[in-house]
Length: 362
Image 1 (cartoon, rainbow, N blue to C red):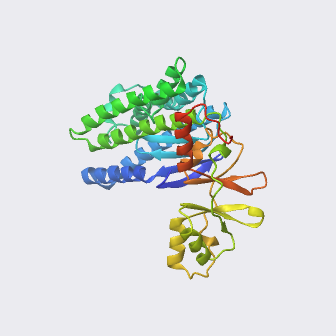
Image 2: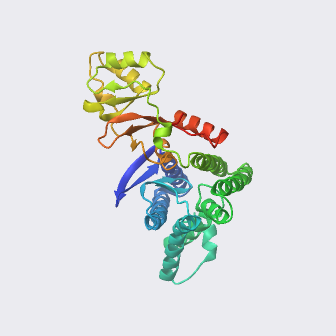
Image 3: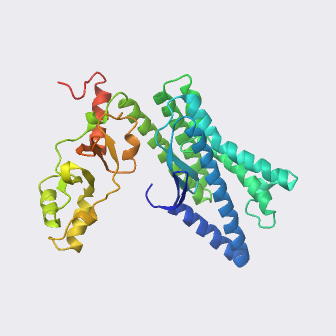
């Protein structure tokens, strides 16, 4: 996800924090400083940091459960409304999705129960005193975990409750219809949340916008997955593309840019080996900062994702969520073509209009 910073990794899963979470942390610290001085600011930041730790554990509850079903997560991104684990694919079995979705809130309940046992008392009123520094830190943290569990069970994407709702609906309906219904319910909740936020709480408006967009995005992704089910990457692969040689200079790259309307240019080495991508913006930046005879290689994005032509298209859409194009390669790493968002959108349009259409055939 853009505008995120990597804090570290655990067992192959990177832990990232979105800048909006840092802004929230700074706002809380500043507010506490204005009302109670540096000690209050310190305690507030410490409290939020502990909540942050609980959110990470919440996400690893999802990840470890998903691994039991062969689903891997490469990163966790922490947002103001919670964490998002980027699974390599979503489970198609609704029972598996139900267990994965419930695992996160279950971790928060376990943490809350352990803290309440350590304190020796359960204080329901602490839920209304999360921002009161006079309340015991661990009591507030236990109450915060109860709040996290309840908040995440709200039936709206991207919260866990939205996925629980879809999983339950998908036990009787098709996945696409279940997603559509869950998304509509989530968007309705977003409207209510936004309306309440108009009465003095702008943070609720921000959360409402995020929830509404997430619900719409989930519905679109599921529709795309259903439309591309059974298709291969090669069915959406663009082969009539201009490539740039790894040893080319900036002048040659500019000439290639002028000769085509492509937005992304694959860079190839010996034996057409895929080396990375150059966007039009990358080439213009190189032109502005370097001599035209300078090599273009330093500007190549070598971390560009790749995929094999025979892979399932519907299970490869997540790669395009984080990159404008994906290099299609053979077993030796040689470039065969590119998969772009526009190309996939065209395939989805054709597949939706003519479900009987045979791609790649006359």
